[in-house]
Image 1 (cartoon, rainbow, N blue to C red):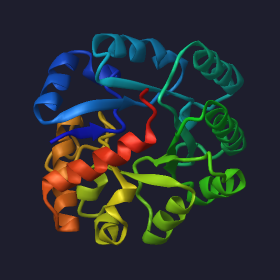
Image 2 (cartoon, rainbow, N blue to C red):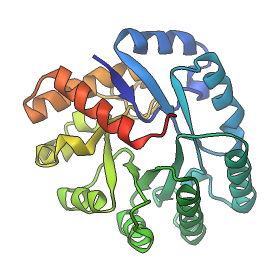
Image 3 (tube, one colour):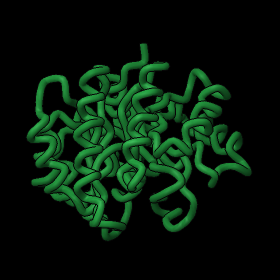
Length: 256
């Protein structure tokens, strides 16, 4: 039973003391592949080091996280382009708009998002979207950029059924993680109305740990808790959840 964690920050300093043990627990739990989203230039080397340690299991994205879109974002975007020219990545991510922490950077976040979508099209790669309190702003840009060569994952989806359907209309899969297990997460109330073929699993570790670990450091082995929740929501076996969501992930990411 193969599981794929489509979004984990295993290179984070939160794992500096026990990273190998964390990876080992995940593999033991059935998680065979790990997809690592970029944040900014300060995390690039840590990502590369993790890939070197587990070359058959770790797959890297390149991009500039919206929270890292600050005054120096032109330099950061130049770094993204330099890395893309040097080597292969499996996606452009995580990119998008975050209006939770700072609304004053909206215009440059929009610019960075558009430009990285164009990079995804140039390199024929999927995008992995970070959206926080910014569905309208994200959808506006996706609407402008919509085309057959734009596809990817709406990471950590927390919106409504209407917003889920709109995300799907832009050729995005929904990344479902720990929020699906929260009592106030709400997405569990309508998720069964979304075809399982539109879903991929993720942890976003070390963030958003699922129940019963909520509030603690998240890790990829907890993907089984999300798998169990989705099995209950869809009324299918855990094996079916693993089979379908892993196949969905493999269709999105370019591993060759």
